[in-house]
Image 1: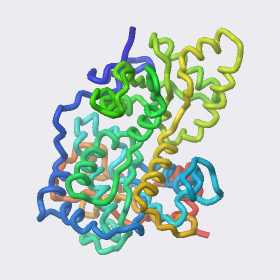
Image 2 (image 1 turned 180 degrees about the vertical axis):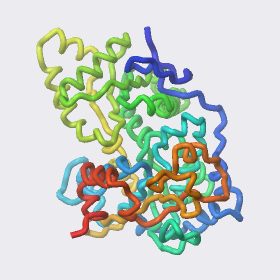
Image 3 (image 1 turned 180 degrees about the horizontal axis):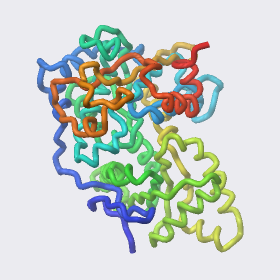
Length: 431
């Protein structure tokens, strides 16, 4: 029987089933250099950013950091979501945006993406450093006014909550940010998509079952889902924990990478057939649709699934055996939105202003000091120079600046317009 084991390094075979979705991790967490500096080197700029954080209060922004498309999709959801009743936090719309009175602050990491490229050069620590820099910049009240500004002369809102919009950053950076927060006492939190989505599915499990993930081959082979799942499962297999569940030890996470089709029913069949073909003998409690740009499919996938299961046929019976009661397709876009809302409520961090959410945008841009031989014709870092950068360099190859339309490519702007029309209208569109 083909099984996923969280201790096996991921390998990508020629077909779409990926036999593992975890990398081996060291037993002791070792923070990336910049995270350690933020905690222990009081003379560093990183430590200064954390030391100056106190007093942000409820007026801080909701920062979202990561690639253009994913960050845009999540910012759009934060601006428009109405999942909760703002009076009692029950899961029912009340006609008022969930983040009413808040400032959503997308930070588009144009300079450093795609993160998948760092795995080819075995330079994962640079992704971790990038995530930490994104956090430190977001909680700071300063940024560069442009790619030419070495002195961070522009003011910006501080973030009271930091949200990562990339699955890669869940495994390469989230832990370093948690390390900073826990060791400096900062009154903030980091949310990441893999932990959010997997925790959401796991919390609904009450018996032995598995969790499915529909993700690209590069996300699966990065190991982020398997490693995060193992940590969540371990919290339920501790016999001294109040959350102990005897069945949890046998549960697994199964990562598949079939191509998405246009039809919802066809996609449901595709994933379940792949799972069944792998000879798993326990049902699935849910499937995480990893791609943020495919989040819009989740409702139709669940509707199609319900329709398939309601039919009286051999095919439907086969699918009923493959899913546990309460099975659902989920997207990190929705689980992160819910987690952010519930964190603000649990910690009384809402502004309590009755107003539509505001939005202010920032981005990373290639520093003006980078020499021409390291750049593409479009002024971006070439792949060779981008993915081979060393951590801990004293030379900044990129800066955090206020969002500038001229720093996006035409393709990126079109992507923003398509996946996040409200965000595009309020940040880019000129009447």
